[in-house]
Image (cartoon, rainbow, N blue to C red; front, side):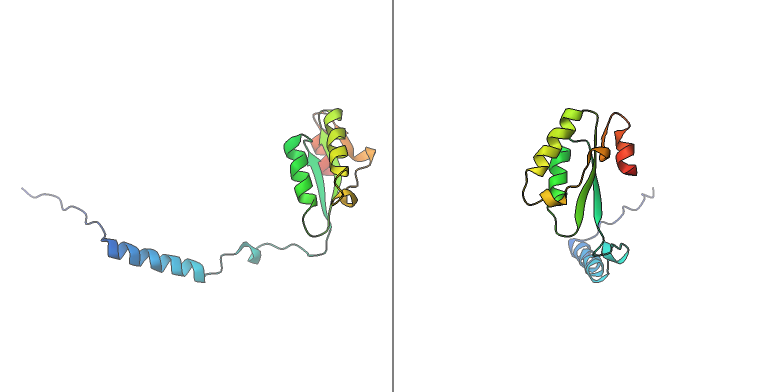
Length: 120
């Protein structure tokens, strides 16, 4: 009776050789995203905060604290109290105060507020 041949498992040595070759190829290849992406260095990045709760406000403060030209230009939320509290909180941070430009006409409320903020 002929038994089917059992597939041979690679030895530890051959596995390590293959893994090392793959790792070497990956590190020598240029896999950086920078080759495919482009952002002009001096253009203003306009931010619209959609959802003015704790997470959104925290993310906005971090984005505004980055190096480079960024500005908060619009805010949107379902609740006016949350939007105003977020704006007050962000405006109280000395390091980012000058990067906030959200006049009343760019403060959007309601379930469709996100779309208005994106369009602003």
